[in-house]
Image (cartoon, rainbow over all chains, first blue to last red; front, side, top):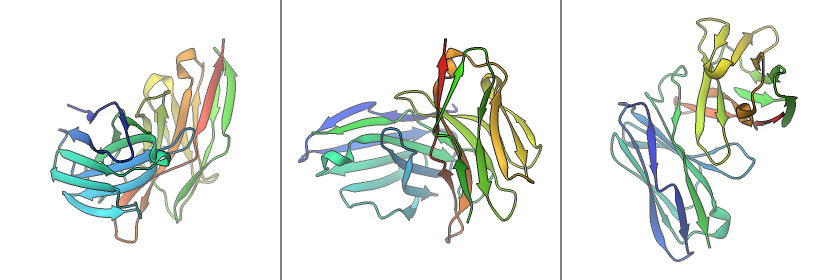
Length: 115
Length: 116
């Protein structure tokens, strides 16, 4: 299995809702990433997990809460989002964060709309 | 600090003509560089990567890129564009953080438009 699977593919939520995005990989990768991508822009790094520990948080608002329950699974919990949080949320994985040669495998993303 | 600059925000070609998407990097050493493609409303797919093994790198779908240290460039080329190549292309470099982790850092992207 050489894929990163993200669910759901599309999500519409109100500003008072709580929802979660899910990301799964079975390649044995020990680094996982969350990115936010607005239209016509490159992905912006949000969080990095290395060996199931949060290693980088790019000053993301607390209404976004990441979780890594095990080495194959990464969640992003959403609460009290704003309309400007509407974007494509991408998950990625790599063998680890310890080497620059590792490629990054991306999921297809979750298209989030906050109403 | 390592970074990449994609010189063109848009490139427009006719089907069957060559494609050139330009990327320059900034690094004090030979970095690891990648090209990714993103079709509309899709995730990112790795086209090819340079990791110092060979300066000319062949990727998927007929794309290739050449690492030129003297020019600090890693331009993406394809001899003949196909309509299905129309997409957003990102040049990416692995950047080391202050904590010692390598993370992917993206160029701004180049939108490739292919005319019939």
